[in-house]
Image 1: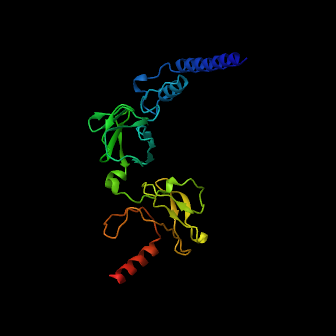
Image 2: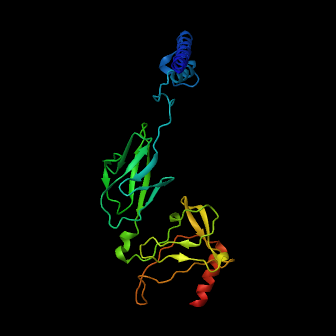
Image 3: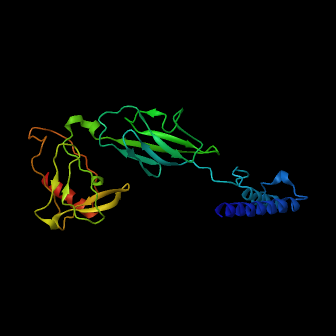
Length: 264
């Protein structure tokens, strides 16, 4: 029965295509087809009708599918990570990569070709060094192109074994608006953060805050804070660097600057 329905539907489709084709040729007598790109001519609209009836995907006189030039997905399978595509930027983060070596990316595109400089890129084949940003150029069938900047962030490559703290909001599997009692250290040193003494001071987990990633909300009004014990890898004589990604209200930023000036 299912096969009969499929055959019947195909027969109807072919019948409609045949009618449109006959209509096209019966009404095109006397038309000047050397000028089918003229929107004022009847031949222009008849050509459009015939293209869609025959599912013709070629671009003629600007009629046809849009010339794609997008990267729709990007990942590095060997690291098990997928990129976040935001406009013309693709961001990836690796928890485990300790040194930059050539890596092979997997990607899908709507374009005709993809290249980095003069080197053609083939998904799951071409390898590149990600020690600096990569600029992929996607070229469409109409010759236009679009550039994508790919950034791979791997904190373990910056200081090697000197990495002692790494707190990632996306390592928490919580619902939007949930209180955060424990925040584990991703550096491997075990310098975990907790807030169990004062539950009302626990930070709030918020989704889609920075480039599609989650973040923790620390509010001054509720004296939000977290603490750690042990401090493995720390010493009073050590020097180090802190890298933070955060957002604060403008008025708070101004107050902090005023306090900093007074302290100086």
